[in-house]
Length: 320
Image (tube, rainbow, N blue to C red; front, side):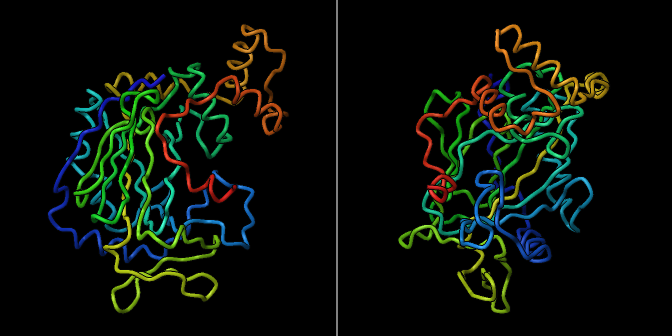
């Protein structure tokens, strides 16, 4: 079920001084290709990644100097409070995507869920997503607000999003994207990056060892094993910065939900009770949690919908 998939709020002219963002981008270089869980078995010695570069500016144990520009942005926080009708907004993550020359879309997806006691640091990603789509763990889910901000207008690079649900056509934010942000629920709303220019030469692939950095003349350069792959001014790259925050309706809700921490045994018990009610013979355990047959069965039972009119993902193209 899509529980929070309201139309995201569009903010314009978010930052009066874009130069601060440029300085932050430069100070946190180089940027490396998005590895992701979309093609984990790809040969790391081959050019099997699109020019989709990513870097964390804020996470659990790191905060880049200057990142408070995004992390503690008062407009983001107040807008998130309004969107969720919530009193408590706790920013926790900021990361950046830099993209160029991708002729297919990104994956159509909802962002990865977090639950009290369970997140990607201690739980397999497939299981987290099965927990989300099973609707068995709603009381434990950590609601998260997301802001996506764009630096410049580029060729293509729009965002497709499905606030009306995956069975309805997507909305689009494309053109006039510079210094705008969308704030909403990317954990309950499917969304997808559209093709990113320049177009005409296909999707340019790099190895996982590639790096994107600014050069002395102001252009940004992709180097891969000492070979220059691509060069362009920063304004020609699709740069987006994502901000995430935990959301609680009230302090009382925060305290109540934080006290409900899921152990892995809790997770397997809840799934197994549901499987028994469904008359499914298999049972999940810590011993078979990585078993491919178990994963296939459970993701088939607790399956994700496919949003209509979604573009083909570049990661599917690479695997094909």
